Image (cartoon, rainbow, N blue to C red; front, top):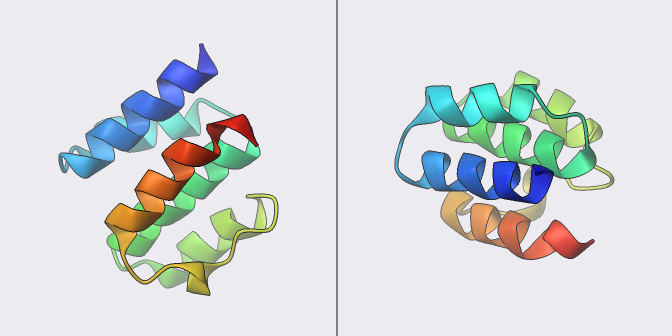
Length: 81
């Protein structure tokens, strides 16, 4: 179920449905969901909150990606980590 939830959250983020994406990742408690959550706050310009979620994302860092879409694509690809 969570792989589907991760994909759904990423799809929502890519289409600009931030509220749905947030609701999905807030209901999950795993490093990938935390990473997606961090990306959402990064896109919204909330660096402090974003860094908090990066700290819970198993080693991902705020500075790792400049392009949020590329980072969301990387998060989707990382589902198998």
